[in-house]
Each structure stands twice: as structure tokens, then as C-alpha cells.
Amino acid sequence: MHERGGMSTLTRLALGALGAMGKLRPKPPTGDTSVNVVLPPPEKHGGLALLDSLALRASSRDFSPEPIPLTMLSTLLWAAWGVNRADGHRTAPTAINAQEIDLYVAMTSGAYLYDATAHALHLAAASDVRGVTGYQDFVTDAPIDLIYVGNQSRQVLVPVSQRHTYASVAAGAISQNVYLFCASAGLATVLRAWIDRDAIAEALGLSHDAEVLLSQTIGFPRA
Figure 1: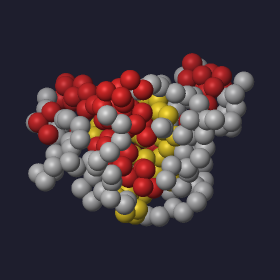
Figure 2 (figure 1 turned 90 degrees about the vertical axis):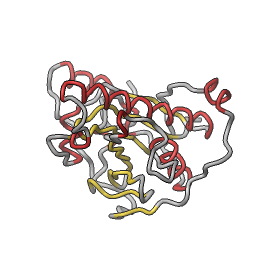
Figure 3 (figure 1 turned 180 degrees about the vertical axis):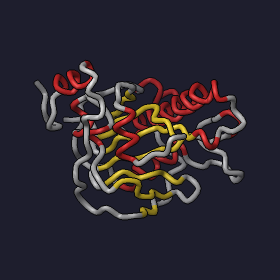
């Protein structure tokens, strides 16, 4: 049984199957846990052509622990959910431009909220929450796990009954941007819905109007 992350997939599956949700806990951080990280300017040109990236788009579950360089992370986050126009619009669509998705980046040094306007990361949790982002064993192998959170406080013009659906569609659009960037940059990724949303929300200190939607693991493919 594959156990590189410290807890096997079978153990994690048992936790979920037995209803023992919330058993996953963050670990102490390693590396430089900065309160704010100003990202370098993203690369907005180059990469593979769109059709070439689509041809290579795939899910992978075998990751190297090699860190992703900050310059590459900067471009990844901009491609995912960055500001691409002077009026503040983003690289992915949202209904009535609510921009309700908060994108968290879980790394060994901590969990950070991506600030697209400043193109910076702000510390949300000074702990390694990668192992909380899912029951699969590879979540602690990869250097990065993205967490998609729907912030209902920005959806005041959306009927309450439709807010989850709208936010889920927006998160799906962002995750596809991530897939295409990873295909172009030679990274591996997989989108995950088998996650302990309550444990993630607790680890990030989310408010009651924030809903954890999905997680996405990213890293270099294991050689």
C-alpha cells in the first residue's frame, strides 16, 4: 500500500466510509512561512498553443515532491484566476462578475489566499494543510494543493438556492485553466471532490458564509 504521505489511501478511505470526517489535521509548517508573498510578474505570453495544451490535458496522481519555482507558481495562479483586464475582470468567468471564488494555495510553509488584484499571497494558516485537503495519499506528495472556496458574501445578487451551483461552475472554469497551464508547463495535476470540507474549513479558519468546493493537486510528475 502506497504510504508516502504518512497515511495510506486505505486508512483515509476508512475514515470517510466510517463517517469519521474531521480526523485529518494540519501539520507544522516547514520552510519560510511569510505573512505576505509578493509574486513576481506572471508570464502572459508564450507556452503551448491552446489546441496542443488540450491534446495534453490529463489527470495525474503521481507527483514529485520537488517544489514549484515561485515564477512558475506566479504564472499558474494568474492563468487560473488572475486579473487579465484593466477593469478587474479575471481569466475565468463568474455570473454577474461576482468573483465569488477564493483560491487558497496549500504548501509546506502554510496555506495562503491568492489576492489577484495585488497578485500576492496572504497567509491564512501557518501550518501544512496539504494532508487535510483529501483522503488520497498523494495529497502530501505534491508541493501544492489548491482549495476552491465559494464566498457567498459576494453573491448577494444571486438567489440563495443557486449560489452553490454558480460557485461550482466558476470553480470548474478556474480548474480547467489550471489543467491547461499544467499541460503547457509540463506539470501534473488532478481535480478532487473527495475531500473533508469541514476539516478544510476549520484548518483555514473560514467563516460560515464560505463553502469549500473542490481541491486540486499540482506538482511535477514523478520520474
